[in-house]
Length: 166
Image (cartoon, rainbow, N blue to C red):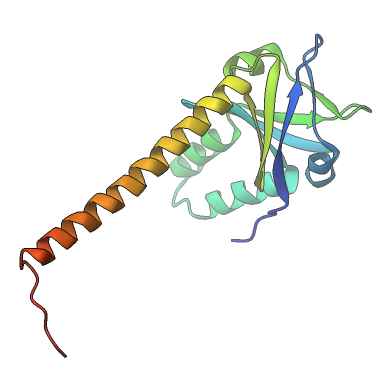
């Protein structure tokens, strides 16, 4: 599977009084003049921006794996629910409607992050909480590895493993 992996970077911008958010020129150049947005309704809600080509490529790939019409419908629901088309104005801003803002828990301060093939917009608070959860998960993985290695060393010292020459 080949994706556009050019959307990289993290930027901070504010939503103005008319619900407009600036999209960095670097992102606009890759997303195109018209692109797709998708509301992500999870523990860390956001709005994701995709180039039209990337979005529809992902939809086609997902539909290709569907075995019947029921599964195709479920895939379409998952891919298209909470989506729409966005266009930047002359100053590089998109309008974020009130329902989108609520669903993504956006407020004035937003963080835009490129994830290779899409851009994610989060409120500053959600972004910070997400970063903390990533750090905790990483620490837990590191801690599990250290504990497992210590246990292995302890078992070896206690003779649980036999040294065999080959």
